[in-house]
Each structure stands twice: as C-alpha cells, then as structure tokens.
Length: 318
Image 1 (cartoon, helix red, strand yellow):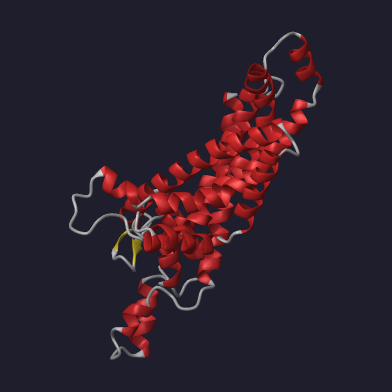
Image 2 (cartoon, one colour):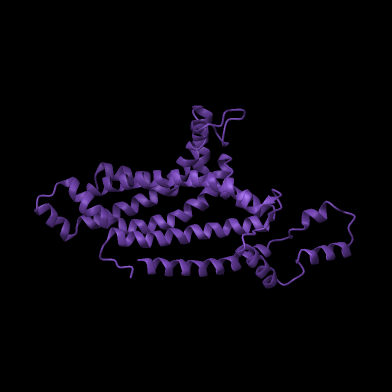
C-alpha cells in the first residue's frame, strides 16, 4: 500500500502542476491586470511611467516566463500578496480555510449520516411508502437550486420564525463563543447538506438493493444471521464501494457549493474568498484558491482508492 500511495501522490503532483499552468493561463486571460488599481489611483502617470512599472513587475514578459517566476517563488513558500486585502496570500487564506473547514466538515458529516440512513431504510423495503417518501425527498433535494434553497431557509427560519440568524459569522459585540458561532453555521450546513443528500441517498439505496440480492446474503440468512447482522456486517460493507466513489466526487461539489452558500449567508470562507478575488482581479489569491480546490479533489480520490481496499480485501493496491 505504501508504494501505491507514493505513486498516487506523484501522479497528483503532476496533475496539480498541469492544473497550475492551466489556471494561471486562464487567470491571465481575464480583462485587466494587477496594476489597474495603481494606475487608476494615479491619473497623472504618463504612458512611459506605466510601461516602466509593467517592466518592474515583470508584466511585459511572456506568460510562460511569468508562470515560471511564480512557480519558483511558490515552491519556496512565497505565494505573493493579495491586492484586494493588501496582505500576504497565506494570511488571507488562513481564516477563510478554517471557516470553510468547519462548514464543509459539518455538512459532510450530516450528508453521510443522513444519506446512509435514508438509503438503507429505503432499500430494505423497496416500493413501500417509506421508500417512496425517501425517493421524493431525494429527488426534491437534487432538483432544488442551492441559492433558492438558501433563500427559502432564510425566509422560514430567520424571517418568519426568527429562530436563527439570516447571515454572518457571529453576533456583533458578542463574546464570539463556540455556541454563538455555531448558530450562524446551522442554516449554511443545512443548505449544503440538503444539496448533496439526495444524490448520495439514491446511490446508497441502489447499491444496497443490488447487494441484498447476492448469493452470500442468502447464505448468511440460511446460516441464521439476523436482519441487523445481515445489513450491517455483510451487505453494507460491500454496498459502500460505489458509494465511496460518489463521496469522493461530492467532496469537490461541496467545495464549489460552498461558494454559493457562503455568499448567501455572509460566511467569509474559501468560496467567498475566491469569488471576491476573481471579481477584484486578485490574481495571486484567485490562483492559490483554485489550486487548493483542485488539491482537495485529488486528495479525496486518493482516500477513496484506499477506502476500496479497506472495505473489500479482494481489492489489492499493490
């Protein structure tokens, strides 16, 4: 397994390097450049002054040369400065990454627990009222746009009932304690979870129904295994293999969905940070944020491959 992990990490680094070049090229196709704000705030500058300034910052060089300078600096830990926040990129990303980690971690846990519970319950009695109800909930979750779901939850729980805050990360002037920040995460976590639960529930249900028809399940029942033992000990472990693949793919969707969710609920996380960076032509911040999203997807796929071998001993990673 060690050789497999090392090989996959090497492949991930190659993909990340290619992605860095592609993203760098796409960002450089955006209108304007990092000196626009500086030029706009100094209307007295001549064309010669602007040309000299572009030469100082290396913006007169070809894109490949500029990418190589950025890459060598990034490998040394220098990711540049954010022109929107006027801070080093690492200092801007730290708080945003912490907030997104809390949001995505809670949403991922809720999605996993609810989806597995719904999928298993629906698969045990296909065609029953419970199965039809869970299918309806799953299809509704898949069909509802994230932004519309966020607005609906804000209207019901913040405006109509007044139970939860509509947006923000903490009470202004409050102590900023754990429970104070937790109540501001409830609606974003519910929104992000509901957008993922439907898809994962459907996959869990289909995989469990197929697994419960296998010969070894009938053998386990013939040997006297109870219903709970058949489901949890024999069926679920094998049914989780395709579900793990969906989970790995959904992890990237959680990050992209967090952009809309964080914007709707005023959460200053990675999604909102990337959005502000792109709108403000903050090249360094947008580039590192998008590369981090690619890195998360690559790590999720590696963890999924390892989970295959853990769930099914027949799968060898050697």
